[in-house]
Every structure is written in C-alpha cells, then in structure tokens.
Image (cartoon, rainbow, N blue to C red; front, side, top):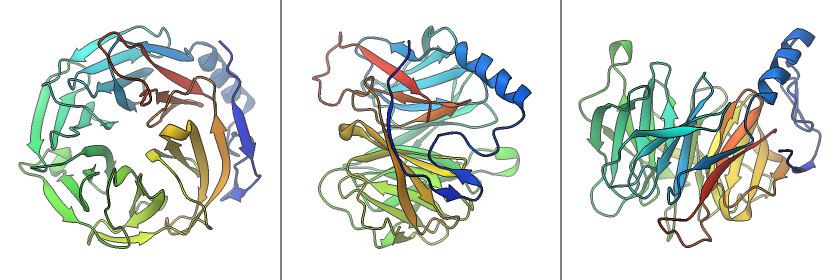
Length: 318
C-alpha cells in the first residue's frame, strides 16, 4: 500500500543534516541505499493488531519485530514487520502497559500506567524478569527511556521521574529511585510529563508535557527542569518522543500530526522544521524507528473502546 504523506517542510541544516526531504546527509553509499530499498519493499506499511487491543507504546530493536503493549490488560504483542503477522508474547497482569523500550540485552521495559508500576520482560520468551512499584495512589506511569545507565519512567500525574539504575553488566536494581522534578515544569490538570528521550548530547533528558504543549530539559542528577526555547511554538497534545539522527519527532496524538524539530545538542533550544500527517493516522501516541521508517500505533482515542474495536499501527517514511 502506498500512503499519501503530507509534509509541511522548511529546509534547516543541523550538524550536517537537512531536515526537509527526510533523508539524512549520511545516507551512505549507493550499495547501502540499494540494500535499504530492498529492505523497505519487504516491510508492511500497516500492522493489524488484535481487536480490542488498545495500543499505546511501541518498541523496536535491531531486528524486524515490533512490540505493542495493551492499555486494557497489559499484555504484549510481538509482530513481524516483514509479514505483519504476530502473536501475544506475554499475558498481562490485568493492568495497563503504556510506554515500552527494548535494550540491547533483549529486555523489554514496560511502563505500567495507572497501576503505578514497571515490568521488565525477556523480549524473546515473554518471561517477567522483574516488577517494580514506582508510585502509589493516583498515578500514570506513561513512558520510559533508556539513558545514562538507567531506565527512566515518567509519571503524568506528578512532578517526578522514576529511575531503575543498572548495575554491573546491566544488572537490574532491587528498588527504583524517585527523582522529584523542580524548576519550570509545573503540573496541572490532565496529562503532564509524558514522552521522554535523551538530549542529543546524552547529558540530559527531554520531556514533553501533554496538557501544556511545552518541552523541558531535565537534569538527570538533580531533577531540575528548564523549558526548551521553542521559538513561540506549542506542541499541543504532545505524547511520544523519538530522537533520531538530527531530528526530534514529537507525536501529537489528537492532532494526528508528527512535528519534526531541529534541536541543539544540549536540548535547550528547538525549532519546528516540518510537520507530518498521514491518512492512516487515528490518534497515534508514539513512534519507533526501523530502517528508514517510523511505526506509530493508532490508539484511536476518539473511538469508544470495545472488545471488538479494530486497531492498527502504520508506517511512514519520515
């Protein structure tokens, strides 16, 4: 299937990359480009998920497999990006699975949403390796990123991050660490801190606040937050974040839009370079990359969820 992707573009050069055509300046040799095209033709543009799945997060590693969590019961579905076929990898505990990240050791980190929890799974077998209680009371453990030797989780209900610091050889910790957030980020009604990625220089973290549309740089050692200078732009309904090459992709769920930002290395200043829309979008929540495609799960937030509601993820070429 060929998709009609709409891109409103402004040509901006960032560290040798051009954010207009969607092709990085280091695309490689003709042979590499030919190999990439061969991979592209073997990939599905739409992944059909089980009815009633209610996807939110997605994770993709080095292989052609995507992992999707269910907000309904926390189960994990693994799909082959070449065939579109998949199966439930891990049955959920009856509580949500929100954001997902996959590490190089084959471990899948799962944000537990309203359960205030986190899980770590074996991405090959589905075995639960560890579970953690991050927050009690009203909470929404929404997203997760692997950075600075730890897994970091956002909580959309409070001004805090939760950290699972890795030990020697990536060993999982016994207990999580709570990092209160101070400074510019102030919580309010609705979803607060949501998507999270490292800054381009790897020294900080970037967090989008859904209810205000603001982006913040977080000091991972102190929790101090600084509003990122967006040049007057607001990232309304900002949800999942993806940092790739020279671009920060911000998925704006109810706007059915992905904004592509030029961001400086320190993560203190950013500008919207272009916006991407696609007819296959149905309130996507986040994005993961494989080769030269982005995969976005459609959460269908404007559709009443039932056990028979169909769900998909779609691929775009950024």
